Structures are given as C-alpha cells and as structure tokens.
Image (cartoon, rainbow over all chains, first blue to last red; front, side, top):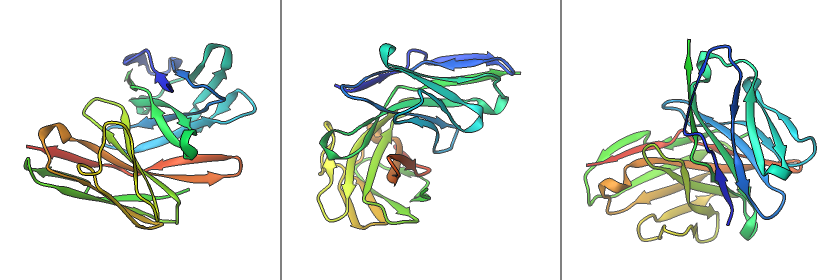
Length: 115
Length: 116
C-alpha cells in the first residue's frame, strides 16, 4: 500500500542554519510528490511538487527538494532558515489509483526555529 | 489556482448533534476532497466528492456519519453527524486544479470543530 514516512516528528534549528526534512515514500509507480507547510492556525500551502524531469525541484520561500528514486526519498531543504519558517511540514504522495488523484500524507514534522 | 473558503471557520458543538460544513471554490472544479486532521495528527482523506455522482468514501468513513453533497462544480458540504468528542478535528476541503502535465491540490482554511 502507498505510504509516506516522515521520520522526524520534531526538529529544532537555529535561525540562519541549514535545514533538511526527511521524507520516504512507498509507491508502486512513479510518484507524484508534494511538500506542504501548515503554519499555526493556517491552512496548507504548497511549497513544491515533483512530477517528472529534473529531480531537484525549486519551490517557494527558498525551499528545494530532491527526488531520489533509488532511496524512495523526497527530502526538503533550505540553506538558511528564517524564524518565520517555524511551522508543520507535510510530505505527500499523489495516489492515482482508481482514476482520481488523492493525497496520502506523512505524519508531519514540526519545525521550531531558535533565534 | 483556486481560492477556497469554508464556513464556519470554527464551532463548538454538543455531542449527539450534527454540523454541516460548507466549501466554496472560486472556479469550477471536477474533483473536491474532504480531509480530517485530528489534533496533532496528519491529514486523512474522508471522501472524494465529484459533481453528479455519489461521494466515494475511504476506508473507515461511512456515508451515514459523513454525508456529503456536491450540487454544482463550485460548492460542497460535509455533515458530521451524531457527533462525539472523537470527532473534534479540523476538517479541510480541497480541490484539484489541473495544469499542463501536472496538477495541484489546493486546501481551504479548515473548519476547527470541538465536540463537548
């Protein structure tokens, strides 16, 4: 069955430090992969997505993610974290089974940023 | 892109009652989805609502508990019936907007439900 694993429940980084959030997926075909961010009291905002082509994907707010098929991973990175990046981050895989596209979400990683 | 609004934004309800959540989209979309996010948890798909057909429910969710309407291409409702404290969650409406060779799923701001 399709699934998404985010191994880190909580991550704390200092402002200005680099960030990597891990995501592993299990999917039988070429996956559609997404990263969303949810700030406190806010809805979900799409950071970036991967469908095909270049495995390094650039997103909004300075985020990027790299699709590695051999490792079934789609890790999210940012070279320098800002205090406003503190939020919950969700990795998701698009499930095309059944003729429609639904998202299967990971458990999320809560990011805290220290000044 | 798609802009989604939900009503109400939050509510506190007594157990045994029902609440209907409305989802309005600013453009016509074929597929709409309803998700639940329990406290401190990730999002779980409840059902897919396509206009002109019955909603398709995921495992663990049934129509009697979560009836859905989809009267047109811009609107849907989700009812949480006979509520219990376990139904306290954020309920999110979502739509798929197709772009050339890709698609994006947009989410509404959510309805925060507390059942006492």
